[in-house]
Length: 326
Image (cartoon, rainbow, N blue to C red; front, side, top):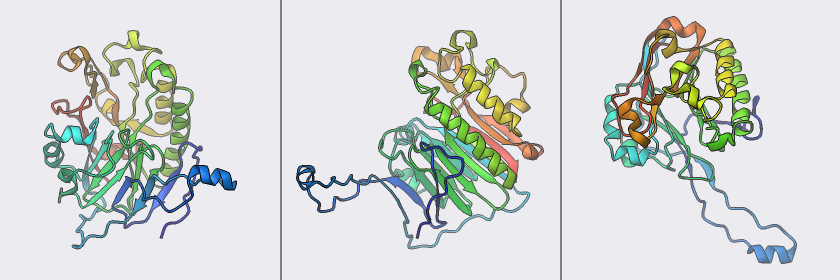
């Protein structure tokens, strides 16, 4: 049923695996243990004990066939992206209503931190295509999801960390991502973050040669000084505002992509999408712009709106949205 995964430009840490068109759910599950010798017995017999599988891709069959909206050429599509900082947690803060009322055709969620969709999301009839990609081993960590009125031609996912969904449609690629944070003390800056950025840039360039790209999500970088409240005190000290991270974002733009919000609002200050829970940061608007829509340059004239929804609470991030003709 499944083909061998293609690994295009992917280092060991970030492999991409295609899914069949019928898959509706990706989840981390604990498989029932098979009868096998204990570790001690295996050692006595000289054979290694098998590790238990923790990641599974499966097809969920529906009794009633799903009806998908047709994505027509030149149609205006609304895409909504939100780092929910825990899907179950945000649902307790009116999150389901936010998603239901946003009016989007495609919704991407980051930091879902769950292995399956809660009922409030699973039962959203407006989005017949639902896909959840969780971390391979840490069920309460990372995770991304896609809800769509359209059925993609093909979907790919980063198969270990629950950070990326790539949906291919007839005339474009649409990506939802949760980029690795460089960590406290920048411990991941030259390792995990470096590997991700190098691989992601090559992946974006390769896709852009085939079809235009819409790339959204929590990118964990404030690109310019205007994109955070306190640039001087955070420069090269805090994850998200180092020379390396900012330079990597610049390289992406120079490869033929556009930061839509900043292109449309070049001098707007105080436009943030993330605020710390500490010190009343949100009330004081001491924030960072970490959530983006980055698109192929040739799509820019098709943009109708790009908004930061800072009126939406429930997470330390607020949603962002894009309306564009695809």
